Image (cartoon, rainbow, N blue to C red):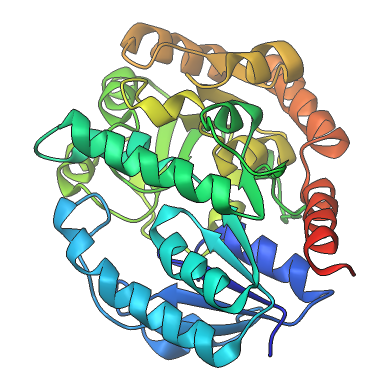
Length: 371
């Protein structure tokens, strides 16, 4: 019997939050992960040197944004349930709504503990992408999220705003932000070249600000926009690669992503405010930029970026001129970049680092397991 099994339907091997959670818990508990190998990546690439025991459901599926992916979920849920019956963990730690159902069934049958780790609100995140934007569909998904959050022994969310979106919660709720483990890179950006490097890392998908960024940088001198991530919507990559000052690095390992960010002059994090969930998202990139002393250009969390930390420039998502002015301002003012970067690093050391989040994780599991 293992102490804890983590379930996750998205890419486990590339998910930094899963890796951090698993690494921290493995210091004190026996742990396994059940994940979905959606892209049929080779077993060797996925499991070699992985931090804990990793078991994979090897069925290729459509991207999560495609509505018909729901036809594949029952197979995945059955696979999870069978593995839970075999391993009999003391706690099941379900990451997001799409792995909750088998974990809750296991809890009921075997009277074990159940953690609902809500990385995102599925109704708010995916409802806008369904072809028929039915209010009833949104309400149904939201109902299930509310139901399982109440039935969980512990509900984990990424920030206070996300917690407030739940009307029904269990007695124990915890906030574990997407803060990174401290990571040291080699050379600094200043040792490379004089071109101002603006970096985006993450999925190349609609509603991440690519169109206004492209319009903002297309005729800027001494600015290079460097992009790394999995391509979901290829037309966006095609639009970017027309420009001579855009470089696509491909789908990189977590270590290479961090190295790219650490060598950048600024990072850009734009989320379309029309998607309800984007009002309370907490991207890893925020905290990675803080860690690396890199200023952020974003339209998210002005109360954090502007008021509390002072580590970036807030822009309007659709305002090309504002985005362009922010890039030019940072490109032409090294002292401003240094000041914003230092503010971010200080905030990271004091409040937004994984060691603090790890201690919160240990408190949760001491409550669940008694040790």
